[in-house]
View (cartoon, rainbow, N blue to C red):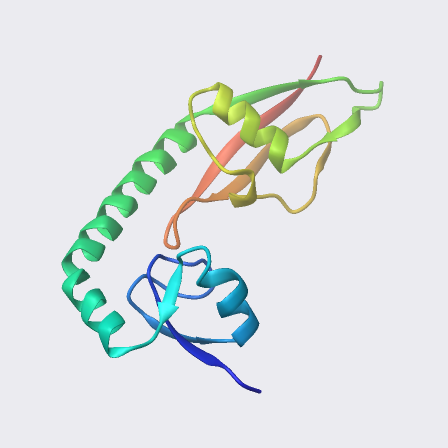
Length: 150
C-alpha cells in the first residue's frame, strides 16, 4: 500500500510529535493533515524549518506538560457533584455522558474537551465514580464525580 512521508508541524494524537517525520496514507495526509496545518510534505526546505524551530518546539512542549500537570492537580483536588433524577432503586432517568461532565467542569472553571474524558461506559446510577481525563500524551488526570439525587 502506498504511503506519503510528512513532517508534523504540531503534535497529533496517536501519530506523533511536532518535528517528527511520519508515513501516513495519502488520503489522510492530503485531506486532513495538510489542509489543517498539522503537517507538511517532507522536503529539504521543511526539514530546515523544523530544525530551526526545534528549541521553540521543545520549550512549547515543556510548557504544555507543566500546564497539563497543574490542571491534573486541580482536577484531582476537585469533587464534582452532578444532580440527576433517579428511580427508587437508584437508576438514573438518562445517563451521564462525557459531554455532560465536560460542561460541568467548564462551569467550575476547568476547561476540558469532552473527547479527552474517558469513561468505561455512560453512568446510569447514583454513586461515586472516578473518570480519566487525558490532558497530555504523558498525563492522565483522575477526576472524582458524585452522582446525587436531584
